[in-house]
Image 1 (cartoon, rainbow, N blue to C red):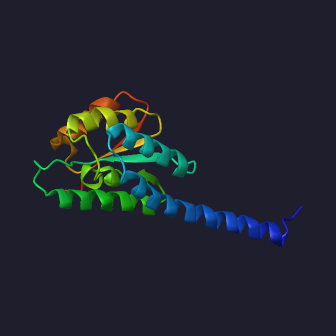
Image 2: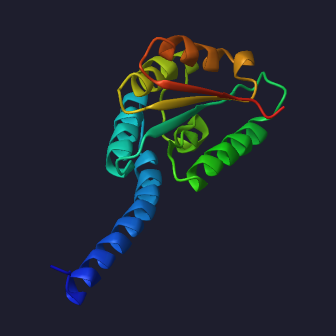
Image 3: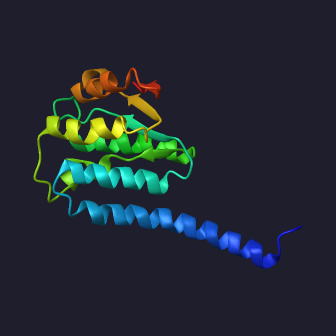
Length: 166
């Protein structure tokens, strides 16, 4: 039986709503993060965001240097990370964007210790089973944070991709 025009219209409307929902969720994410005080709260929001938005796609995570001790400024590093995320998203992948969770965007955050962030946010996120692919990008070996992420996931059943544009 062929779908009626009305049924087709309903399906099209659902697809539009689904597309709009994803855009709204990014705005909601920023609103929610404005009130985050702990890494545990940030983790809860991140996991819920992945659950709500992955749409049966694999979830990619980009491990990228973010330390002020590297040869690039934080602004340059964030810009480079966003370019990598954008590239994979244009190819149709769902990439967990960690930039909204960067401490500089968490205005009410009471915890600032990077080791605490790794233990309370990144470690549970990467071992949650919600991240399917981790991409180690551009000078990851020079970053202690990326090295910690690598050590954590190297024995997990997770696809690992290594890229270096230099």
